[in-house]
Length: 165
Image 1 (cartoon, rainbow, N blue to C red):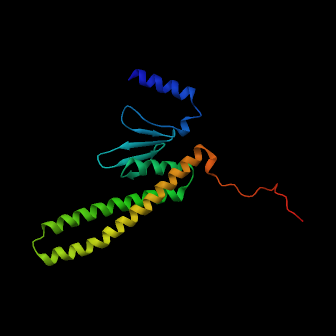
Image 2 (cartoon, rainbow, N blue to C red; image 1 turned 90 degrees about the vertical axis):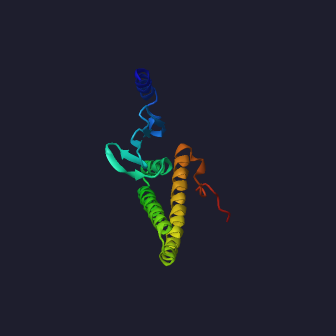
Image 3 (cartoon, rainbow, N blue to C red; image 1 turned 180 degrees about the horizontal axis):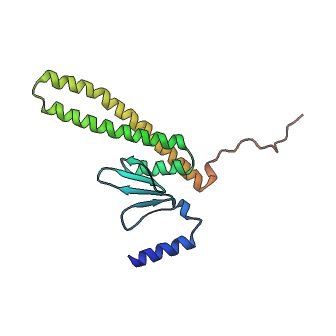
């Protein structure tokens, strides 16, 4: 433990400029991301903190890290969308699970059929939310990659192009 703390102190001194691009897992199992965010695993999901402020609870590390990336690069709308879609997805999954269990335990066929019919729209909505969340996560990955190297930036026509008369 003492050696780990000493190593971490030396690492932070030597690589001060790199800490804003590094993420690592500490001895407590928490993820320290970009020197500013903490992702803490909990019984259900992962809780994200920005400095000392709690941001929210995410279903997995991928969405939590995507939120951190979006916030780091000041894509606040993307960060908000990731948090909102992840919360919607969690509520839809739990709602579908509860209603499916209720339908399974039902003894009357008409009641079971009614619940299953209502579940179809929720399942379709869940797939839509999953697709939207995947798009947001992929865009956050793109932003992170672009942050490491500017190879993905599109270049326009430069001003030095000569026009013919």
